[in-house]
Amino acid sequence: MAIYQFNGYRPVVHKSAFVHPQAAVTGNVIIGKDVYIGPGAAIRGDWGKVVIKDGCNVQENCTIHMFPGVTVTLEKSAHVGHGAIIHGAHLGKNCLIGMNAVIMDNVKVGKESIIGALSFVPEGMEIPDRKVVVGNPAKIVKDVTDEMAAWKSKGTELYQQLPGELHETLKECNPLREIPEDREDQKMGYENWGNSKLDF
Image (cartoon, rainbow, N blue to C red; front, side, top):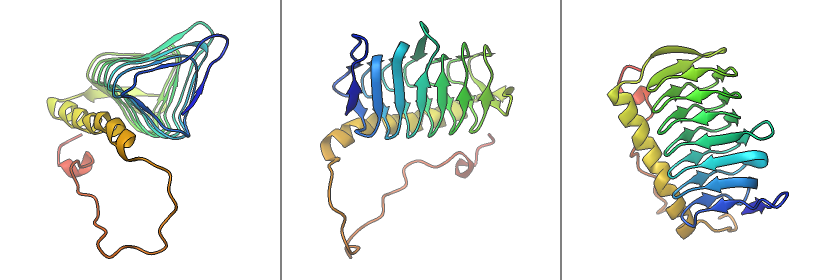
């Protein structure tokens, strides 16, 4: 793991969490149980504090940072999609931040809210619980239904299982030169929202 002490602050990572060797975690960062941190993620607790609570995931190429003295908090089961940027914000319990979304300073994302991919959430925006937010600048467009919340939670559960699987099976290797005849494809256990045939 690329874990770095900075100015006397050493990251705290629960033993059940998985921080990919190609991620970088620096300084005053606290990572809870069953958290997944993907390759390319940069979590910088150099100027302030980052708290990533149990069951969260921060996927590939995400950035978490802040202005000096600020604490960034990801509440339990917050889900941060590929390439998203969280800067000085507070993410509520079981929320979903879509791929390549940007969440700016002093934003508060409510519990079980869903932020669409590529959304830009401007500084200081307060999003109530269970809202769907999209656009640039971001706007609240509807409520999160029970079906949406259940779909989101199921996806996050997959990421909560992933750290254990990675601890057990991930290892560096040389590639094969041919495809084995008995190689099977992975099974579908979770569909994207569009294929779930529910009205997002």
